[in-house]
Length: 50
Image (tube, rainbow, N blue to C red; front, top):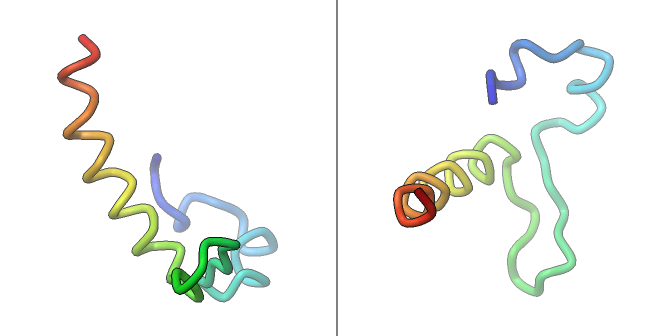
């Protein structure tokens, strides 16, 4: 929610900002990009839930 900058480096550094997914043709993906995509989808969905 507040970005990787707020997390301890010992948690973030080993990940190298890379997400490997089991979804075919969807990896590797930057964790930051995954967060941006997830946020964009959440902002579209949340108003319909209220």
